[in-house]
Length: 119
Image (cartoon, rainbow, N blue to C red; front, side):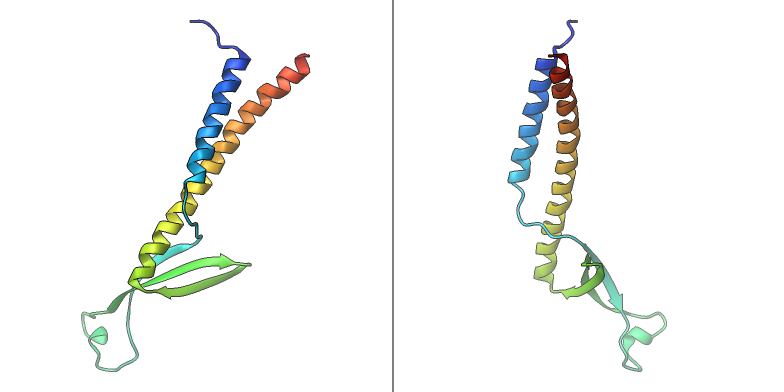
């Protein structure tokens, strides 16, 4: 099997980088944080949530994230949960794609630097 030239390898890296950039361009809104589903007790004595076994209230959904170094928590409606999940998934996909782009860029950059040094 013939060994591939640096130019061929560089062309492959550049093509892969372009593919990743196109995927990145197609990502919708992004949102950081996480969503938790909770069941809770209330403060009403005699409520079913204080029985044995308890029947907790809920489910309730909370979004939590770090904003400027502070943990922010917000209750979400069921409609908001769907949107936030989609946006958080978009954010995670964006981060994965950027990491892949960085890896490809390092390999392509090393080839380009070698090419310049060889001149």
